[in-house]
Amino acid sequence: MKFLDQAKVYIRSGDGGAGSVSFRREKFIEFGGPDGGDGGRGGDVWLEVVEGLNTLIDYRYQQHFKAKTGIHGMGRNMTGAKGADITLKVPVGTQVYEEDNETLICDLTQVGQRFRLAAGGNGGFGNQHFKTSTNQAPRRANPGLPGEEKWVWLRLKLIADAGLVGLPNAGKSTFLAAVTAAKPKIADYPFTTLHPGLGVARIDAREFVIADIPGLIEGAHEGVGIGDRFLGHVERTRVLLHLVSAQEESPGKAYKTVRGELEAYGNGLAEKPEIVALSQIDTLDADSRKKKLASLKRATGTTPMMISAVTGEGVEAVLRALMAEVQSARVENEPGEADERWQR
Image 1 (tube, rainbow, N blue to C red):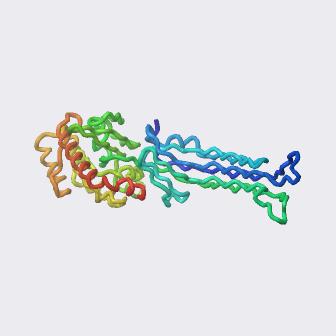
Image 2: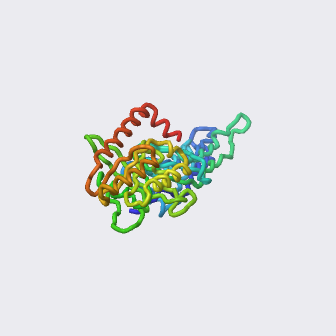
Image 3: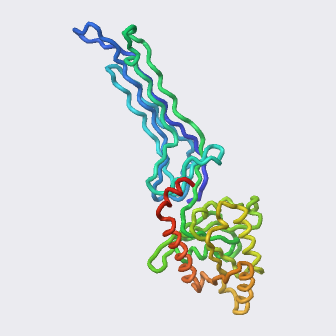
């Protein structure tokens, strides 16, 4: 299934049903009077978070969604039925923006959350509402109010505990495949992942979710390559795992390139806890490892970890370090986390 994390859709709630003009006609009742019922309310447009979805691909092929019109009122004071609602089902982490793609309407972060995007129009009054002492037989009724219509943007931001960042071919997809059941594309020739991936890692009987995003290159914040459009998927993560390939001529320079793009992107990514690891160390001998590690250490100011997703060397240590950060953030944010994410 193709990954789609942004879609523009048109929504329209239902118009209200019209009120009825009607009069009672009953035997032995001298003065019947008006008995026109009210129109029914138009259907609403709802957004609902459901399990089992991790992309907005459904909205690539259908972009128009319209709720039903309310049923018109009828005689004998019968009110029309409400128009049928329509519900757009979306994955966890979906945000909704106005047509300008900047004004946030809602941010849905939990399964089962619902949000009304457009309310149906009210039904019109029947002629029974217009009876007065001087007008015993009103022949007027209100039409229903029109529904709301607008274009909105749906934008998906994956919800994960840890995010993988780094240059293309830094070994992010290989690491994800090694520690989770995810099956990203991996090959022995240079290429970059084109779509984000998710996987669940398990260490010491505890689990956390890892998000792998396409690699960054210098100038990504200006649109170079595939740009930084996928960085939104690691905005919600609690910790970043920054992988730097041991095959880089200068691991320190590679690290600074990615850090520069994170800082240029903003939105708090540069301030997140970060674990730096020199990856693909199985391709180096002992002396080369020391040199590459020293270069990376000078750039980061800390001692990086070393891993090889192919041989498994250092992988458990990295997972434990990630789990420690995730667990710490979970404890810290647990009380008001849901409320905070809703307002983000």
